[in-house]
Image 1 (tube, one colour):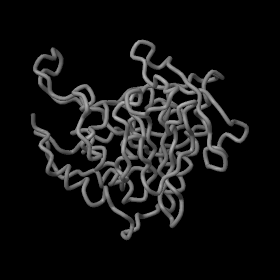
Image 2 (tube, rainbow, N blue to C red):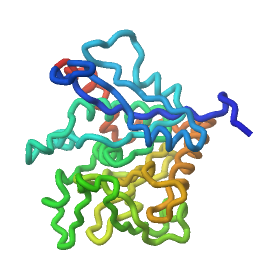
Image 3 (tube, rainbow, N blue to C red):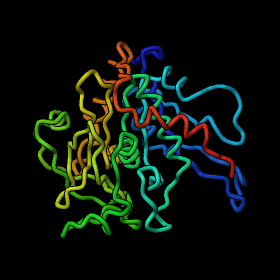
Image 4 (tube, rainbow, N blue to C red):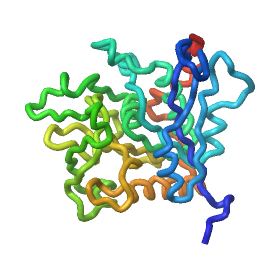
Amino acid sequence: MTQPVSARLKIGLSACFSHADPARSLFTNKTLQYVEQSIAHWLMSAGAMVVMVPCPTGDTARGDTSLAHYAEWLDGVVMHGGADVWPGSYGEVPLKDAWIGDRIRDLYDLALVEAFEQAGKPIFGVCRGLQLINVAFGGTLYQDIEEQHGHPETLRHRDPVTYDQNFHAIEIVPDTRLARLYPDVQTARVNSIHHQGIKDLAPGFDVEAWSLPDRVPEAIRRQADRGRSYIAATQWHPEFHKFGSTETINDAPILHDFLWACATARVQPQRAHRSMPGRIRDRASRMLRQALLRR
């Protein structure tokens, strides 16, 4: 039986940015905000209604709609993949020009995480989303895993030629929620489309899966103590899993776990504790308001 519209979950999806470019023939010198369709279709596969959350600032900004309004209206948000995280977001200088990332998107993403965390709504991150969440709560990143990680068997986590056909193994940490979602799985195969990764884990988070053999965090989750709201993320792209395939880990348990949290929060959202260390609470909205998105 088809679920009525009023009962369907409304899930926000963070925007990717294509900044104003005078050389672009389409939408010349205009800023584009967009989503990659696989992740929208992934959420829709379980009946959710997906809404891209646009950045409310910029040189064309009008009106008073804020990210906090979206966080109040929606049931949860997914932070999806894209450009590198700017190293300045975690207190470092870019070691190469190619690793400079997207500072403007960082400011928007940090404020978006802040808004949903303060509203007590679930947050799920994919690839860049995992990295951004880790940075938002006080963690750091390897600017490039191959150059900085130092493991004798460091994997190539991103291959620009094979892209989403680049795979490696992961180990699921026992006694975690991820392990309970996959009760008969100790190791699995996932896609790998990133060259940055978690270096220092954010306080209050646990690693739920590691890459093999080089042990880079592949899944994280915020500790559930003291009524904190749901925040989880994977370094791989669950939305790229082919339906029915056994080559990579099944995406369905992860998706349904997140949507279950969203349904629960719809009834009883977990408001952020004002006494919590508030790295994003203290800075993200202020930084976004101050950011010069005009180029």
